[in-house]
Length: 239
Image: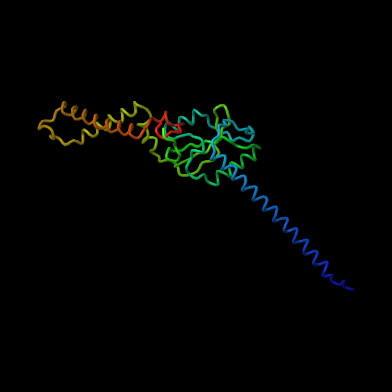
């Protein structure tokens, strides 16, 4: 058996060809990564810019029904838990990569570009103009919104109870009355007279109510606070 001689030039050309093929693969990977980075940048720009879009061309068959919420349902939760539902460009927290990944997945699944993002979160997480648990939504249309992503920690289990007084004037008045009633019982017996009487109790209660109500009114006006129904979709700090 006669072995063929090795052609070094031929081997060299083959090596160059293989190297070029590998280079093409690397170029494809680089192009893919660059396109992915560009998509992230585009989505981040959309999240950080003002948009008046109130409709996205979702594919009905690809929607998950348990992630569709009407604006009235969103409003009710915002009022109950003293949250705000505002355009994403007011959000001052960091939007995680998981949200960007989910947006890209939805855009691919629905063959569309999502716009008009909104976020539900406590007021402290927004950059509000002067006048723990974010949820990112995209509008579907006709008052419906699609839950895109949720991140962060859950709300305190007692938050609804803690913000109950700020729901309306009746709740706030009842809260002040309750606090005044409890504070009246904390006044030591015989502090103002030797004989305890019902009249004395109600006089002390009246003064307690006036004092606490004054503090609440001052706090409300000085800091520009308002009731939950008035702020849930307001972009102003002192709405």
